[in-house]
Each structure stands twice: as C-alpha cells, then as structure tokens.
Image (cartoon, rainbow, N blue to C red):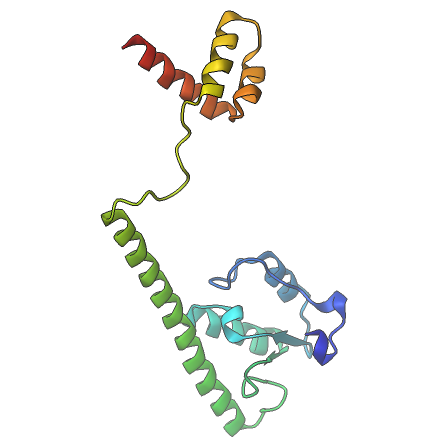
Length: 179
C-alpha cells in the first residue's frame, strides 16, 4: 500500500484471517469511511471468504456509505474507474465470480484440513498438545512439598508446571502410589 502512496497512518492491517468481517481493524476502518473515501484492499480474499458476506460488505460500502473500493491486485474491481452501466456490470460479474472462488477455496481448505485430521487420527497420531508427564523433577518437588518444606507454588516452580497441571499430576501420582 505504501508503494501506491498511502500514508502510514492510513494503513490498517488485520492479523486475523479474512474468513469473516469480525476483525477489529476492519471494523475501525469501516466506521471511519465517509462518502467519497477510497478503501484500498490488497486482495479480494483478504476482504472476505464468504460470497454473500463479501457482496453485502461491498454493497454497504459503495451504496450506503458511498465510498469507493479498489482491489489492488484486480484492476477490474475499482469503483472509481468504472461508473457507467457497462463498467458496473463488469465489476459486478467479476466480483460475483471472485467472491465465489474465494468461498470455494475456503471450503476446499476446510475439507482438506478435516481429511488430514481424520487420517492422522486413523493412523493413531497424537493431535494437540502433548500430555504432561510425571517426571523425576515433579516427584522431587512433590516429595518436598508433601513434607511441608515448600509451598505448592514453590513446588510448581520447581517442577516447572502450571497450577492446574501440578494438581492433576498430584492426583495421578497419588493414585499410582495407592496401587
């Protein structure tokens, strides 16, 4: 955006995915938009990935707010240039097709992700965070803690585990000791 002469103070970036419009900086920009302003968007799929939502946002900005939108990587999606009926028709067609493609891509990504997760589960691969184990450091901290020489917080630090993990491991360890 800097390459096309937009001031640093006028550039807003979202760290979130473009899957929906509940993004803090997008909402801020939209509130700041006034009639005649130009909203530059790097790519339509950064704008959103749901066809209906993209079309609704586009309409809201161009018709209700009466601001312009320029999609920088797609010159046909520039509401400042194509204002006649033919231009509007072409822009609408391109917008319909590209927003549909963005939604299809999102659907494919979710499908492939689901297939990958299912395959990993079928192969017995562990998904998610590894389970905390009862380590020698934990046993040492537990023994000292049980004698009353240190507090539970000190034992947690010594075992290098968070509070909830510490108490879960205590429960597991004490169950194992009873057997």
